[in-house]
Length: 282
Image 1 (tube, helix red, strand yellow):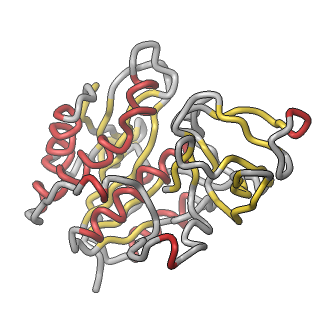
Image 2 (image 1 turned 120 degrees about the vertical axis):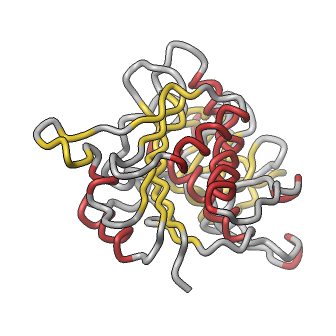
């Protein structure tokens, strides 16, 4: 079945994105938001596709070709902004009526994020063409670019995105459903997590369910290590709440506890606690 919607996590691989700060790298936050939405749409039985499900480098041509060839009617391209502003921005084509963008903006506002603007932009050299390649080069696919906030905001965007990114991701799901006529059901509390897997069986029956998943900290100042150890001489640094590693490789017993062996977006191996009091797997 052809997808109705394709989701595009902006940037990736060698391109970290400009909307990065000390709390997140834009490409990782884009992927986190996109995987949440991808799984929510699947749960709602909405045919959906995605341009990448991992930290993958996509050229502009490759990315837009994936969208064009997907057969989808709509595309959502997820981003985090930069430039010192504050609030979400939704960009739509000069050839669109903007209804999808405005509906998403409304739902983002209902979730507590202020919307800076909903707009179109043309090429300075040709007013008949869209400025942004993701809108201009995706053919007949109706593409909206969503900037969830500013990574360098002097106001509250950084805290809001860190704490509420999943609420904003859900707002887009609801806004799209309402716009496109699909039935929307709010997530049950047990489902209100981002993941790229469906975990139906209890952990005791599937002891490797976490392999390949993302791990992020529930607290500020969580330590991670360069080898399986809790000692200071193995300490590398700390991560703050909402930040983590994109891939879990293994779970290892260390003294009286457990650590996850993890890999960062550059392929470097580290070790972090597997205690669910301090981390969550998503």
